[in-house]
Figure 1: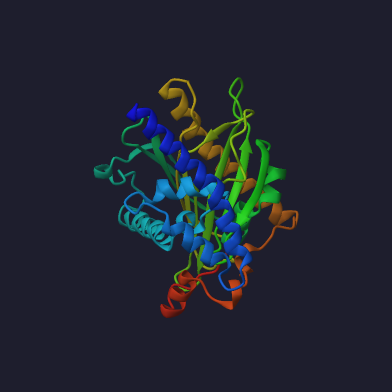
Figure 2 (figure 1 turned 135 degrees about the horizontal axis):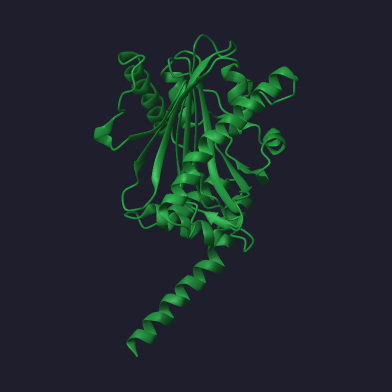
Length: 332
């Protein structure tokens, strides 16, 4: 009896939250003296502090809102990726012309070694999957062209035949992060996969580095479809350092990537698909950049864009860039 009563009470509380929280959120947006910030503060007040991530996702599902303060790409993620590139370049300079192990103590294993291209992998703890890392160079395109081609979702629909759908779902003008919905073909007989991920890029002219960070998120506007398999574990970090400037040919890049395509195939099949698919993607990306350059295909120049601040105020991240001049940040 007590169990039935407890279940009934729990169901009643959840039902009340489902009915009230959307109204509270809308009410907060409707009031000029509170605004959206007031509604978000109210939502934050309901969170259970020790487990903010899970509770935040639950409340986002109940209110139909995407909580940017939880999901946006943080500055420390950008800086960590840039530091990994510095470490890679340091090792490369020390052992120039030699095939050396890269951070074996951290589990990295060299699986492909070609001219201007090396591929490592390391096991992801608790899974049968690997994280992959590519370090390479291109000498015939500029960093700006290569970076913009990656970011231009409309152009990718033309050069990537695997794309079924690729669109921006929502943008956060405070930080420059944006949520992307990407649907891609998988080899027959597998279902197509779809990804919902947040991405953000950082361009530092002072230190001559460009960073693009992407990782999977949930978004209330993109529920799972029975036509696709949702990939929920996905991360990608691309770092580019020009040999000279952003507008002259030649640069090094470091791509770190992992995802779980959720297939029933044996481990070696999945790892083969990922490890072979990454070089293939980079080849297509490089070719698309050459075509954009030689055929003068119009590609959006994200690096030169900077969105206006919300309500005339800079975001905390942008304020930190003013306080610390060497980290000059531009946003997509």
